Each structure stands twice: as structure tokens, then as C-alpha cells.
Length: 57
Length: 433
Image (cartoon, rainbow over all chains, first blue to last red; front, side):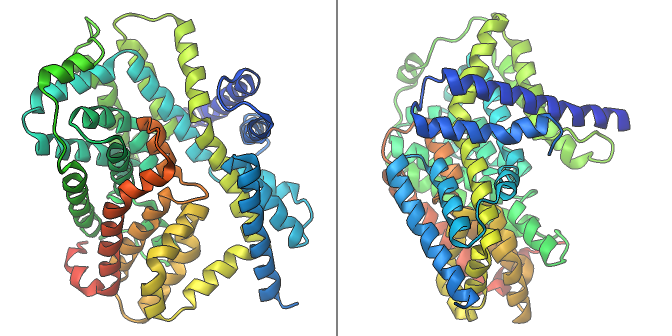
């Protein structure tokens, strides 16, 4: 059970990394919401996912 | 300058910044962060980068849920399972309009009741329900209002009511005895919502409805379509009732497991490239919600750091009881709109102590406040369930017209909650331990 729980815990870090990659891709290749305002929004929305994936926070 | 005056000045500057940046940037998400920045500067905090970064994590769990739930639902639609379910519902219940609408309302209550998040109900079954409602003759604004109202009611419904849980935890009272006192008002309001929004709707003929739906995938049967939903229900019930024997998976992983199940039941066996496209489209579609969660977290953190959050809470809680009755219907929803579940901690918990001091049944009071907070899920700046509802059903009208369609059931829910708040003793018989 402990091993399984640890596996699930690590899966969430991997998931955060995958979402960060997807968001970075959309920052440069998005089809909706163009413009500088959403460039900025994408840029800071990625921060928590990157920090979580890197185990920083 | 006194602390009160300085904090009031910060609040005024933040309100002005929010109005101006909303007008200039046309992005509510960016406006919230600009507002937080202005608040920090006016309060003399400079640029507290650590508070901004910490704030982005406040609602990260909800962001995970939004993304994974949407991946699951888009995968589910992609394989044609949604279409198969809609067709099965239409074929079986077409002649019984009110029964069909009630079944749809109950269907919408389940995911939110199990997760505590109304937005999950909207994301998981909102699209399916909206498709059937349209074919049953409801106008577009009423479809969005239906999905929104049932979404917020699902968050209030037991067994998981996050607002009541937070208030109970803050006030050192056990989260027990809430089941009936939450369920009965929720069912009454849900029935009223169905009757009000469904009144006058004329369903199309069964043949016309079925002809208007996309063709059924040859191998997509109703039982195949039911498998991913059954897996979701089993995982959610397992997490609730077998919490000590099963590992804690969490809702994001549950939705990913269901998405994988959906890929497994795909009769056409789409290539991996197509699934990657679905995931990319989903991330772009759900991004405004994710950005809202991140931005609201930043704003809430700065509200706390500048003392504005405390100013708002103290000003409300210090009112006499009659003043709380008179203003709850406006203050609680507005607090929810800006603070999310934090409203239950900041306003709810002190209010429980206030009502306990006058001898009211605090279980009924907590249930009533949870309903009042839920009403704020369509209000700015977050508008989280409201925005999700209109995006899920594809409503093209203005946000104001959506609010107008929601107004009557919204007010009825508020009146029921206020009645429970004013005479909690009358609803005390519903508190069963």
C-alpha cells in the first residue's frame, strides 16, 4: 500500500510536467485567444506546473 | 493614517485597478493579477514575488481536476459514447418530458455531490445534459441556466459539501448530521429549477430529434458507453466508502483512468496522433478556467497579505444579526466569487461562532451558508461554474443574458437558504446523526 501510494504521489509530479509541456506548446501554437495579454497569462499559468514537476514546491 | 483607513485605501485602489485593467486588457485573468500587483504596491509591500508564486498554487488541485475531467469528457465524446447515451435517453424517455428532465437533474447532481465541486458536474455530464435539453425544446439561455443551477446544487448536495466541511473544521464541530439538511433543500430547489426552466418547452418529435443527432457509430452500444461512467462512479464511491482499504487516487487520476477506459472501449481504434490532437484541443479549451484558478489564487494571497481580506470579513461579521440577515444574500455570493472556497473559512467560520452565541442550530446555519456561498459561483471575478457552464453548453449570448435566465431559481435558492438561516429551529428536525 505504501509503495502504491508513493507511485501515485510521483504520478502527480509527472502529470504536472506533462501539463506544463502542453501549456508551453499552446503558448506558441494556440489557435484561440491571440495577443500579448494571453501570452502573459499563459506564461504565468505555467509557473505552478513547472515548479511542481521539478519538486520545488 | 490608521490601519483601517490605510487598508480601505488599498481596497479602493484594487477595485479601481480591476475595473481599469478589465477594460484595457479584456482578460479577467490578467486583470486579477494586475489588481494584486496594484494592491501590493499601494499597501507598501513592493513586489512580493514569493506571495505571487505561492498564490498560483492555492487552487492548483482544482486546475488539475479541470484539465483531466475535460480530457476524459472530450475523449468520451470523440468515441461517440456521448451520442450513444443521448440517443438511449431520448428513445426511452422521450414521451415523458418531466421524468426525463428530473432524471437529467439527478444525473447532474451525482458527480458534484461525490466530489464537492460543482464544476465537475458541469464538465462531466453538462455537455450530455445540454444536448438533451436542447432537443427537449429549451431555449439556449435556459439550457445554460439549467446546467449552472444543477452544477451549484450538486456542490451543495451531500455527502461532500466543501463549504460546510471547512466551516465545521474551523469551528471545531464534527461534519456529521448534514446529509438530510443539505439533501432536502437541494432536491426542492432542483425540482423548482426543472419546473421553472422546463415550463413551456415543446420537445421535438422523437424521429426529428434522432435525425438531428450525429449518426451512431456502428459498434458503439449503450453498455459500451456506460463503462467509463461506471468506472468513474466505482472509483468515486470506493474513495468515499473504502478509504482505508484502497489507495488515495485523487480525482485527476480517476479522470485519467476513465479517459484510458474510454480509449480502450473505442470501437474504431483511433491512432495515437488523433488522441494527442484531442488532448491539445482540450488544454486550449480549458485554459481560461486554469488561468482563472491560478489568478484568483494570486489575488486571494495578496488580499490576505494587505489586510483587505480581513477588513472585508470583519466588516461583515461585526454587523448585528439583523444586518447579517439583510446582507447575506449579497455578501456571501460576492465573497465566493472573489475568494472561492476561502469564503467559508474567512466569513463562514466566524459566522458559525456568531450564530452559536445566539443559540441557533449551527448545523442548519452551516448548511444555509453553504447554499449562500454556492450562489456566488456565477459572480466575478472568478465566475467559475458560470463560465464553465456557458463554455460547456456552447452558449453564444452575453454573460448578462445568462445571469438573467438564472435569476429566478438563483433567488429561490437564496430565499430557501435565508429562511433556514433566520429560523434554523424549523429545519432542525432534518439534522440526523
